[in-house]
Amino acid sequence: MEIKPVRTEQAYKAAMQRLETLWGAPSGSAEGDELEVLAVLVERYEAEHFPMPPSDPIEAIKFRMEQQGLSPRDLEPFIGGSGRVSEVLNHKRKLSLGMVKRLHNGLRIPYEILLS
Image (cartoon, rainbow, N blue to C red; front, side, top):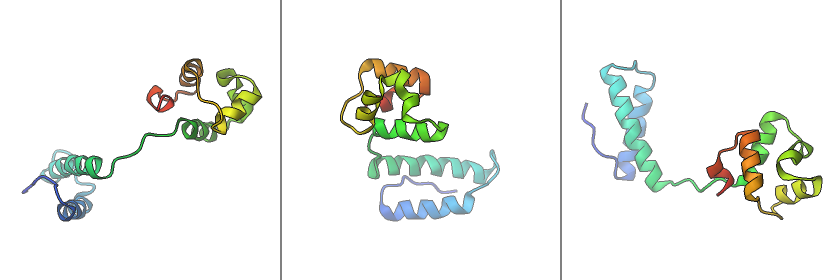
């Protein structure tokens, strides 16, 4: 097992091919250890070269609504009346700190997403 840092696109592609080969290796085996180390190196390379933009808080709310089968009316306890819910969902009104706290507590949406 010869592992080197993943610094180039070529090294990244080679590491990804090797990961495919090692996928499913038993934990604790030599192949499993190699898989674990390579995964960390690839993750670091991807974080540097393919950064993820912060999530849109409104899209996170809509996603949670879809997951839980909620309607806009179900958001009224967290955001306010139907007009305010509509404004928030249509990006016409920003979330207040009170809304953020209620959405976090009620729908379990992480603060860091709601505040981004």
